[in-house]
Image: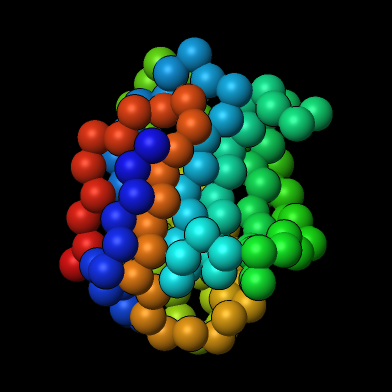
Length: 131
């Protein structure tokens, strides 16, 4: 698990995360203000919580999870490296998946700056870059 705090991620910037899924059940990337205010919870699930080969996105406000969004495109493989690129504006998160597919998830907070990035689960992170 890796938590990055007080590192500014602003609208229009790119967040590139590369890693490698282990013999995976699931991993996640979270972007927000803190553990109780998560604007984007990006959760590829190989086999977890009743989901197989599904990407689940959500947000958490005031410590409470909201409605999940599911994406059937699943370009992740166990024991293979991946790169995910995330950008956003006040309305939408854009998530570029390893196969080039672009996912969209609403920016329910409407904010243009976040300082909390959390990465965990059954994957090893190789790098985080913001530019």
